[in-house]
Structure formats: C-alpha cells, structure tokens
Length: 165
Image (cartoon, rainbow, N blue to C red):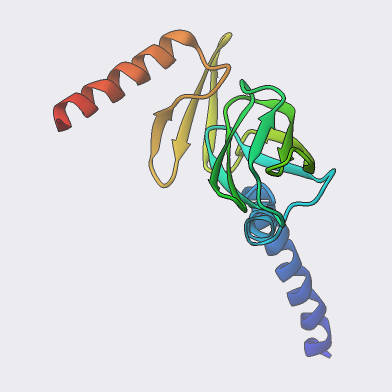
C-alpha cells in the first residue's frame, strides 16, 4: 500500500524538479541544444539571450545574411552553413539568409530575450541594478540599469583589464 502511494508522489516530485530546472534555466536546456545541433528552416522563430551568442546551422550554404535591426541582433557567418547569432538588445527582428546567387534560404524571426537564471535585479527607488549570481553575486551590465551603476561597473572592469596588461 505504501509503495503504491510513494510511486506517484516520487513521479510528481521528479516532474516538479524538472519544471523548476526548466524554469530556472529559462527553458533553454532542450531548446538551445536542439537548435544548436539542428538546422534552421524558412519562417522559423529563433531566440537568443541578450549579451550572449549561439550557433545556428543551416541546410544550404549562405553567402549573405541580412539583419532587419542590427541594434537588436548581430549575425556572423562562421562557415557557409554555420551562423553565429549575438543578442545585442531586447526585442524582435528578422534575419534573411541568401545563397550565392541571391535566392532566399531562410527568413527567420529573431527574439532577443533576457536570461533569467543566475541574475538578481535590485531596485533602490527608481534605480535598477543587476547582479550575476553564479555562485557569488557580482555587478553586471544590463539594459535598463541605472546609468551611475553601469558607469561604475564599466570603470571597475576597465581598471581590472588595465592592471592585467
């Protein structure tokens, strides 16, 4: 009788743990690996985290890539069938991929989103600051943070970089 009750409870706890993991990872554990090893097709939606890059593999060799709004995302051709997407700012834009004679290979919607896992946002009145907490909390720069906080974080980073040289 006790085993019968524990089995569903254990399955429920496992399902809950998976949902918590997926929530903390932004649902990216499966999506990033699938896309990173899969191929993009026409009219497919793709997401990338702001201030991060990801790999996009395409079925046909690309000669030209066009980003609708380069302020939101950037794309680099690593090799003819591998593109590197970089999230620059929050929002959506499109990516058009053309072959060597100008025929469209894909027209993709790019969504640049905030990575939720490992970050803590602190509000002090109207001023917002962001900390990266993996495992210790350190200041990080995010769009929308207080400008004084951002300037201090950049100054501190430059100081560390110059002392390393």
